[in-house]
Image (cartoon, rainbow, N blue to C red; front, side, top):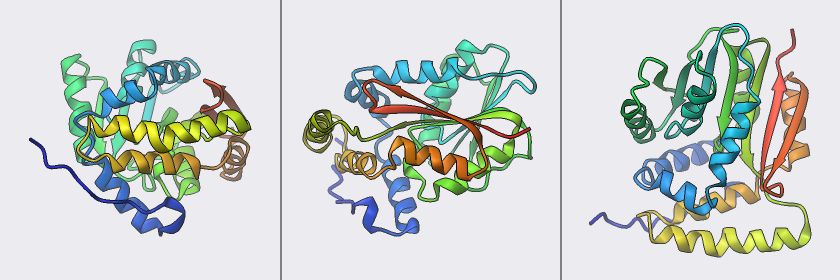
Length: 250
């Protein structure tokens, strides 16, 4: 039986960027085993629909290459292979445990020729300028303290006219739903996670990171400040998740 982790993580608004990065690396190294199961359970399987919506908004016109930043267990990358059969994908993450889990899923589907895994840093992408049609990140930008730097790197590696896409959870602004969602994040979700993971505090961190993430309009402004244009945002499932899309200028 796996030993339960009893670490208590500090709130993301009270730690340094270095502490935040180290905390995220520890968390994602300890929740890999039941990560996909908990994603489906805690989102009531809406995470599948959110990724599908994202991939349907991707456009591959020139390179037919896609970069999946903070790929995790490669769910978004796998959805790209399904809906865009001509693409090849670079799937990057800084957690070896996540890459190993994603690689296993890719091997089971015999997609090794289309998805290549890279262990790397979102703030220093190991790719040349203007290399991909699309760079995307799903539920990962919250875990990167320097979000603007990550977005700038994603912008750098896409072609002029290419897309930078961010799928992320937000804390709702409507008072009634906000209160209900707060109860879910703070009490129900960690309670459910406790039955499936040896590190239930990781899901308290998840709740905290959602509640402290910029509002959708504020995040759109961050994308605009990186030099992206034609910023669009799409609310999903009552606004608990948004797809943000920006274009690299020609």
